[in-house]
Image (tube, rainbow, N blue to C red):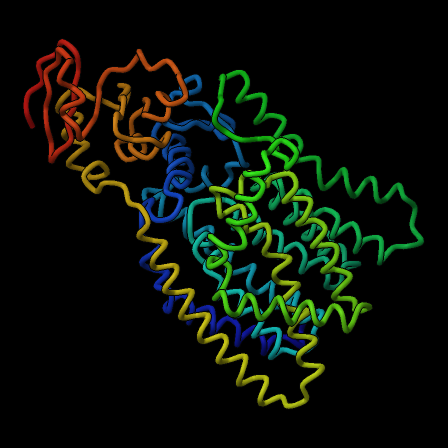
Length: 473
């Protein structure tokens, strides 16, 4: 790695450039907003519950009372718990995920260099990965998916370099465990380190393989076993800790899932023209050169990605953040394509010029796409304001009261904004009992016409409590 110091310095310079170019400082200060605000609210609800109710690490909860007291567990809440210890929790969680992403980009550089052996091309591949709206949007978000794939890249970089060094070996295992803890489905990638381990230790006993597998899987299995138990005893019906394989889907939904990936959401990976061109070059390189070491790893990663698609295809219909699992395969495709081009075309200056132009177009496209994704959806600034908290408290809607948010179809967006436990239209649509609440919150007064209640209004939001005369704010 020592010979790569110059490349690392150049990469750090470009990471600083990306920070300002994508206006990451502004994004880090955003509350929940943009694409998949529903899932963002779930993450931040868990953070805020740790903070607001002083919960222990093993008592994660959200605001929606679809489970007992909102108690739910999903991915390992390490960063949620850490962020909850700070005043500006949303900023801290975004910052943590961005730092992990930045470290993974350095890891991507080393992975690319391992196969290509040329700094300039390893840098170009890394910068192209920085031009993926999918990676850059979710890498500065609250969801754990981008953090999981980031840890995976870091793990792979330690596996590839000087694996026989015990420190690198244990770091590789540690970061792989973190990836799986952040997102259980990433355990499928265990085939990659096991293949590498086998390749480097062909003459060792199989007993070591078994120990290696158990070591990697022990903590994730322990956590997800606890999470499923925790959700069971709290009667949770929301958090998804299973698979939805292709054989449980209708032919229509299978076709819709594939259409989403390759048509409707194809724009989120890269500039579509670049993606198509890269696929063509990759296929050509595979046909022309079937024996490269890159292709062996690419084939393993591809097989893992196909297995993932078989097990989680239904999720592709509405959740584009599930596509982050594709990023390791996309990286290998880029490496294979660049390696083939640079070996076929001997004019280095021409290659560099073309790559720089491609990079510029992709960066512009990525920035434009991220900016658009940030505006897809927002939570009302009124609900999340300090003034609205004062309004709630003045009308006796304290933090121990429950609220039915009659306009919110998600489990946690409104409830997270007002920092109150309760219910939403999500509970109504899923036929859950919502009879036990203290207040109704709605923007549609017509919904309250048949209610024998006293209503107070703050900037278009109506707060209602049965049988209690509330003073207007």
